[in-house]
Amino acid sequence: MPSPLELLSVEHLLSDEERDLRDAVRRFVDDRVRPGIADWYEVGLDEASARSLASDAGKLGLLGMHLSGYGCAGTNAVSYGLACMELEAGDSGVRSLVSVQGSLAMFAIWKFGSEEQKQRWLPGMAAGELIGCFGLTEPDFGSNPAGMRTRARPDGDAWVLDGTKMWITNGSIADVAVVWARCDDGEVRGFLVPAGTPGFSAPKIGKKLSLRASITSELVLEGVRLPADAVLPEVTGLRGPLSCLNEARFGIVFGALGAARDCLHAALDYAATRQVFDRPLAAFQLTQAKLADMALELQKGFLLALHLGRLKDAGELEPAQISLGKLNNVREALAIAHECRTILGANGITLEYPVLRHANNLESVLTYEGTSEVHQLVIGQALTGTSAFS
Image 1 (tube, rainbow, N blue to C red):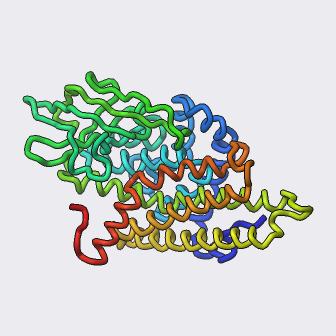
Image 2: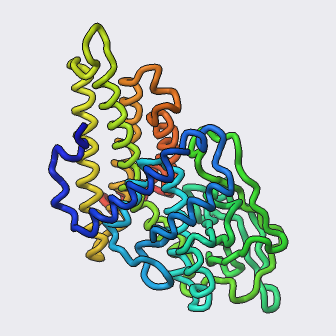
């Protein structure tokens, strides 16, 4: 069965190096993710499996792959996007593990950390020997990070942090947490909080119906005392965490397409073999109309993602353009997953097939790293010059 993306003959738009990296990640997903993903989704991903995945991803050079130095691969943005697409074709939770590690935790240290902080953390994180998480979202402040209540106050030659962060990928297995807190002067600053620091805990969030093959946690800081060199020195204000979020959102623009493509492959294979009224399901006009519409949206989404990747590699990508990509591609990927489920009928709700697993995961992707409504307002502000956020 040909790939839906082959209809537009897009292979020539990628360099040899980009195709080779994409294919290597696809093999990684086939070998390391697909054999266990149904069980991980059903029972939840345990710490040992998560660390093993991170280690193998590190050996392949996927962690912080778009960063340079400190053991990072230094690939271009398009290669990183293609890797995210292949990872999310396996599962959104696996892509989340890699993107939170590289685009949030590692990027924050790489972009805003001191040389000592970079040397301490980045090589181990690039190798998958150390896990990082990113603490911005709070129980009452998701789309409005400016309202954060986590506080950092100076105390002699140290800092003391108090607060709570919520919905933190990798939190309970992280060796270091990048935590954003408001200081007494009103500015937001980033802090590196090593696991095991007194007063710091990361209880795991359970009973999830989405991203079950991903570890999600709360971060609790109760009088956490940190040395002066724990603060990220090169940034103050929300510009810091928001620039990290833009890195992660870019990966999602590609990643969501991987989940959609995997659903469409499953639907195509199923429709070709499922007999209905003595004919293959694929032979019915309504089925072909569904498949045609989904393939069209998948290909349009890929061309959009690739265009944004080329802009990013040229240093010309703007935040509103990332919002365009995430809004469109996640929304269309979710619609494709739902439509594919209708083709599979009752079989579509089982873990024998990937479709409903992807659909459930995409419900989370739709709202994390900025909800669809937030991205609509970012685009609206770019169009009108007027902010509707407040």
